[in-house]
Structures are given as C-alpha cells and as structure tokens.
Image 1 (cartoon, helix red, strand yellow):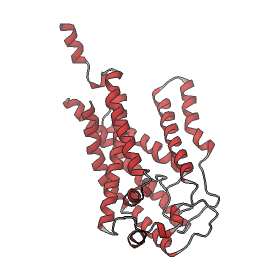
Image 2 (tube, chains in turn purple, red; image 1 turned 90 degrees about the vertical axis):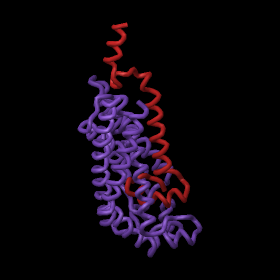
Image 3 (cartoon, rainbow over the protein chains, first blue to last red; image 1 turned 90 degrees about the horizontal axis):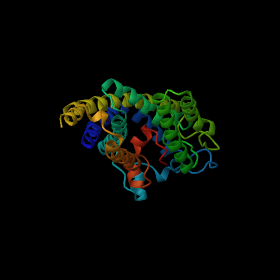
Image 4 (cartoon, each protein chain N blue to C red; image 1 turned 30 degrees about the vertical axis):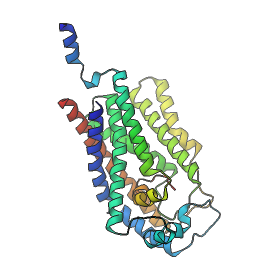
Amino acid sequence: MLRQILASAVIAGALAGILVSGLQTIRVVPLILEAETYESTSEPSSTATTAHHHDTPASHDHGEGIAASGVWAPEEGVERTLYTLLTNILTATAFALLLTACYALAGHVDGRRGMLWGLAGFAVFHLAPSLGLPPELPGSMAAPLYDRQAWWFGTVAATAAGLALLVFHREDVFKVLGVALLALPHLIGAPHPEVHGGLAPPQLASQYVVAALVTAGVFWVFLGAVSGFLFHRMEEEA
Amino acid sequence: MRHSSSVKTLSSTQSLSLSAKATPVLIAALLGMFMLYGVGFAGSQTLHNAAHDGRHAFAFPCH
C-alpha cells in the first residue's frame, strides 16, 4: 500500500507541477515580475507596518540585489524559471501525498472522485485561507509573519476537519460541528497590517488574487483527477 | 483453510483494517507535510529565494 500511495503521488505531483508551471506563465508570473519593478524603484509609503521583508527592497531583489547582499538567488531567466518548476513539482508532490494518504484511508477512489478530493484540497489550502490572507504580490504590506502562519495553519486544519465532518458523518451534531469549524477561523479573523497596501498599484494586486486562485483551482482539480486515477489503477494491479 | 482463503480473496486494499493502513498513511502524510514545510515555509533565505515565485503563486505566508 505504501508503494501505491507514494508512486501515485510522485507521478501525479510531477505532472501537476509541470502543468501549474505552464499555467503560471500566463498571468501569475508576469504579475509577480511587474510588481517587482515597483519594488525595486520605490520605497513603501508607510513604515508603521511591521516589517514584511518585501518592505525593504534591497534585501529582496533577485539577481543583482541578492548578489549584492550576499545571499544566493537564482539568475533571472531560465535559472529562475527552472527553480520555480522544481518548487511547483515538489509542492504538488507534497499535496499529492496528502491526497493519496486520504485515498488510502477513505477507499473507493478513481479519477472522478479524485477531482472532488482535489476541489476539497483547493478549498482547504487556498480558498479558505485566501478569505483572510489573499494571495500577495511582492511588496505588499503584511502583518507579522508568525501571526499569519499560525492563522494559515489553523485555517487549513479547521477547514479540513470541518469538511471531513460534513462529508463523512450523517448525524446532525457532526454537521453543526463541521460548519462551526469551517466558520471559526473567519470569526477569529486573519491578522492584518495596520496599514493596507503595497508598492504595486491596487488593481495589479486584485488581478493577482484572481490569477493565483484560478490557477490554483485548475491545478487542484488536475492533481486530484490524476492522483485518483493512478491510485485506482495501481490498486487494480496490486 | 477454505474459509480463510475466501476471506483473503475478499479483502482488497480498500477493506484493509485501519491498523494495516495506519503506517503507510502516516508515513505519506508526514512526508507530505515535511515537504510542504520545506518548500513553502522554511525560513532559510536561500530556500526562499529559490522557491520565491512558487511560494507567491501558492500564496504561502512564508515571509
């Protein structure tokens, strides 16, 4: 069973990582690169916000900026693209491992059911967190890192548990508990900076939210379908 | 003997007991979380720079 879980996750992760890298070149990466042009040419308008490292452009620039500060960064162009591809494949494989672990627990999965699992993954890891912490361009104002990470992890855990209670239990008490868990992180509220905004224009930031979420949605449905299909096929072969 | 073999035939991976599933599921889940942490959240500046665009694209609060 371990071989089935790992093999289906690695293959699905590689394919989904390649796909999402292609999708990101349409809108997501161009918007990141455009935002970086504001980052390297201007200072943040307010210093009241807790330091987000992008607030100090010198510490973050790619290429020359990083080289000057002595911290390694991939060269602009092909090298940066290849590292993004590697990042995407590893991230997709990590998500696929969580999916195939769920398949092993729940059983009865195929490509079609895998898509539903993928949609659940999108809701857990992207949709719910983005309600409080939308995808951000480089140079955005942000609350302290640990507060945001704690809220992000809490939201992922509560959304996953809430969805599981709603889907896998029929009793009303579990359904109520499930809805409560889905709502809880948003009732608590995500940590926000005292001053909103960033270096890039607001319309660029809102375009980025849409682009990142749509890309993530397509990625998750594909990852779920492929991992579900492969998991099912390897089960038949076993 | 005959009974036990028919039981064995029936038990596909889907009907494996929870205890038999527990170890592989736990290994996969921990490996997935470990990888997610390394790629998306690890504080090392070098890792951050390498994974920068992917982290922004997946909206991980990593910095």
